[in-house]
Image 1 (cartoon, helix red, strand yellow):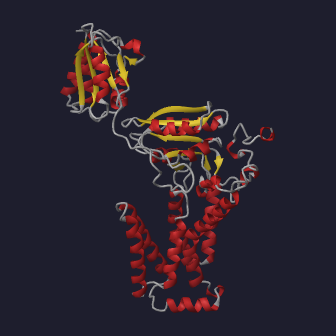
Image 2 (cartoon, helix red, strand yellow; image 1 turned 180 degrees about the vertical axis):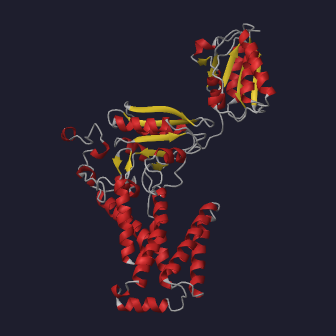
Image 3 (cartoon, one colour; image 1 turned 90 degrees about the vertical axis):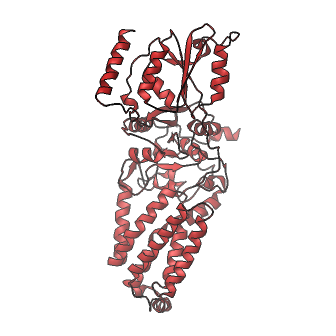
Length: 512
């Protein structure tokens, strides 16, 4: 036995004497980065020692046609057993097969234990042959995967209906399928000491601003996380202002949205195990925009955008305006409407602030309950529950009929936001503005809006001002803000993202 193996056995005995037998909780950083030996048995012992007593660790021993002992190691359930049995073991043990030396079959190899462990945990089968120090890595991943389906959180009115799934390579292929640009670059990174989650950072070289790309790569590389189970981990850790209620990185299930943003010089981030991709940087205006805006005619898209902006404003301010007018400024309401509102509130024992908070809280509870219930039942419970609660509250004299109408319109308005994360921010901010309206009336609402505008103007996403193209003013970006100009007028890319190739439509080519 070699001196190295004796030293390793001594170290193993020392660990066992100290009671450190549980190696299942080790991260990849704690795996010894030592070289494999030329003995198959010793290498198997090294692997079993690092992975601990795992019943799903499979070791298949066989002999190659030259008579040398060999073994293939993999995790049950993460590999395609047919590939291992039919294409590896059978071919290498068949005397008439030319598949004898893996080094001649373009397989990746390594002699590092850490790399071997990582590949086994990722679903690869590791082949080891007696007398050869290198282990050969076979891509035999074969676990069940969800197929490409329509996005669940972003309904598609017009456009492609394929959405991201939980498999990283499939998601990157959906991007490549739409963006056949040789300048598209993909940077592979691994984050999470225990989960070892694969991440793809995608951008178009020559279009994206290099310092911005480097900043994204640097922030992800500097993450020291124990685990990454969803892209939300990355989103929250690399954004500029973590305490802000407004999302500074956009998430989406739609590949066409990622491609459209890549063509504007932004960066796409795909995380293995989740159907939600990330887009950075993000500005405030893109959270009420939808890919359908560019698939429809410009005047239809402009009208829909105005409806969205009005709906979001209603979702944020309508309950607080009702509180301010009814409690502090009734003289600003027409007389007949004041009389009707007073008649409806004659049996309500609470002030308008408590009335609004009660109804808004009830609606939020119903909305959360409808989300958590199974698919077919959830929407039904939400609608029926809202009707029953509203009717019962009015009959009991707890709220006025006007309040029920206002809460219903507010809830419908919040559904008009294309971005779920932005809609949650609006729903959350609705409560503090209601409290300010209940204490100071319209002055409280104005104070809230001033504070929010100052906060939004101070935000940046990877160096890009959050309120651009409004603040600072960017005339090129104004063509795609509230109005969606015709495509032939948006011949230049927004300069706020510091793109290198500013021309999107070249007039010389169109004239030819």
